[in-house]
View (tube, rainbow, N blue to C red):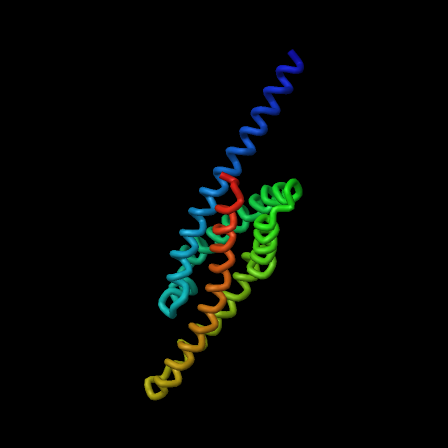
Length: 171
């Protein structure tokens, strides 16, 4: 009886772990596509202005990033376990990319960057003068260039992690 119960728990545990790994791939796919759509909105003056001026939109974007980081952390432990068992090179690359996303592009770092961007946007808007419209347009282009570079860096990391997991046989 005790042996049967132990075996049942082991089988259920392995099944739950396999199900979590399969589900995490689907979850990360969904988060990737949601971020990719969000990133498109954030990469221009109108999108970032909406972000800076709308609390609900800001909160929704931060919650999406929090979800991405939560699931990437979960993925990290699954991939780490795979790497520890097999020394798989794809797993090693995935771990490296997750670590970079979780350190350099954390939600806190994003908040810091975006707070600065919103402050810069406010200065640009407040200094608008119809007589200096060319300078205003130049300021907006410079602003967008920096913003796009940062958003593209985050997007690249999220997308590459998603690509890795499809090569790891986690499904």
